[in-house]
Amino acid sequence: MWYLDNARIVASCLRSICTMKEGDMVRFAKWEEVNIKNSKTWANTPKNHLGILVEHDKLMGLARVLHEGELYNLRAVFVQKAGKKDFSAEGMSEDR
View 1: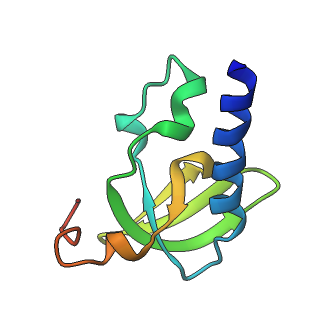
View 2: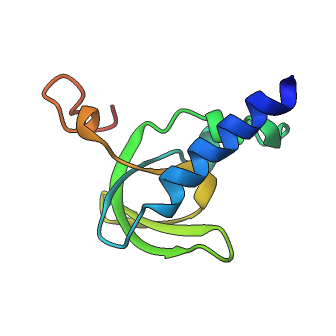
């Protein structure tokens, strides 16, 4: 039943990716923090940085994020729309 677990992970990632619009606050992982050897774990990578979504190309699976004055070009799998917990007093920090 491993394929059901993978399908659930992919479905949750797609829901968060498809709801993102330009101008949204997002959390993301920088490429340097990702285990590049195992692409199956990319969806589970901790997304510890907050930024603003500048551009989202759904067809190519790319996202452009503004963070601390720098633009990052990322794969969309490393970007999620930020939620309420990202803006709470305890969760709010420079880089979580």
